[in-house]
Structures are given as structure tokens and as C-alpha cells.
Length: 277
Image (cartoon, rainbow, N blue to C red; front, top):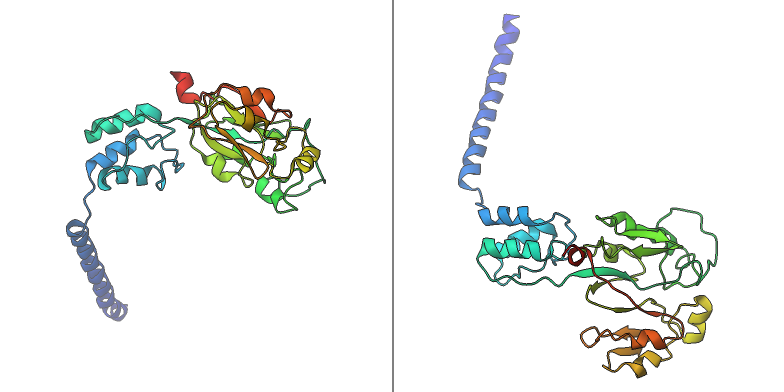
């Protein structure tokens, strides 16, 4: 037994000594090689809502907080979910002038519900928009429209999206403008739009009018009545689909009135932050 101990003990002591030395080296390295964090980054991070949506253009809230402190010229009004409240707090912490946040909401550019269009085949498989799109562009007759399986609703942090009559619907009063739904939609029918907008095109079909009309009674047929009637010249028909330049749009609603298929609709888009105010 004594022989066993005498033969093993030196090895144990050697390994223990090596471990102790390594631990001391790590402690010294951690102290002298550590990167100091500006306390303002931590304070700004606490102000941000934590949605990590990337609407600011950075890799989540941590990335935006770091950029505000360490990248000169980074604007304080890029956090759309945080709205003016967060922008004011950040401006105060950095000692800069407050910048107003342009609030946005998610708009579904499709009204191809069960009354306006129909299915072209029965889909049996994984119940997601991404999955159904892999089968001939989706099970809907219109391959440009909302796929209707709720990928957008599942990523919405504020439960602002639901499925109704086969397509996604946005509750603007709950929408915080994070944009996660727009990034998730495989058909790209959800766009982030200023919540001051008063008219929207509820179609994404770029087929010629006759073809689009057969697929959905709500489809834009590219007739250009909206383009010709707009007093501000804010509407242009491109690729058989109406597009509104909101920098020119006065919200008069003339385009919605003359649209023969109802593809352009007048609506109040005031989102969560402006509703709260």
C-alpha cells in the first residue's frame, strides 16, 4: 500500500501544481488582458426593449447599444419598437439632441382570403408557410399571395398577427413595428410601412390583369385608373401592379375610390405607440 501511495502521490502533486499554475495564469490574464466596457453601453442596453428584431440595422439590442457608444454617427432613433420613449432615454444618456422615431407597422399586401381566391390543391405536410411554398409555390391559386400558415404570427412578439379567412391579418393597435414578420414571410407580402399612411395596395400579384383576376377577385389588374386619378402623382403601375410613393401621397383616397377590384384600400394604420399616445 505504501509503495502504491509513494508511486502515485508525486503524479497527483505534479498534476495539482500544474493546475494551480494554470489557474493563476488565467487570473492574471483576465486582469491584465480584459477589455473594459463603457458603462454607457450597459445603461443603453437596459433602455432597449429586448426584441432583438434587427429593425435598427444591427445584430440585436446588444449590437445597437455598442454601436451607439462606439460608432460615431449612429442615430438614436433607430429602435422602432422602442419608439420615442427609448430614443429620448438614449439621447439623455449620450447627451445628444433627441431624434424622432418614424413609427412603422406591418402591412399585408394581400387580400386573397377564402372569399376572393381558392386553393389549387390539397396540401398535406408540415403546416408552415416555408414548407408549403416548396410545393409548386404554395397551395393557393395565386402564388404571389399570403400562404396562410401563420409563420408571421408565430414570430410576432406582441401577438399582433392572426389568421382570418385563410390569410394573415395585422392588428395595428398591437403592432410595435419590429419587422420580424416581414423577414419571416417567404412570399414577401408583408412590408413595413409608416403608420401615418392612409391608403395601401392589398395585392402583390404581378401577372397581367386578366390572369391575375382569374386567380383572385381582389387582384390589381394594372388598369392604371389609380395612376391617372392621383392628384399628387404618387402612384405608378409597374410590372402590372400599383405602387404608392408615400413621400408624395396626401392620403386623399381617390385611388381607393376608383380601383375597380378594391385592391387599393383606405385605412388607419396607427400602430401601438401612436395608439398609446
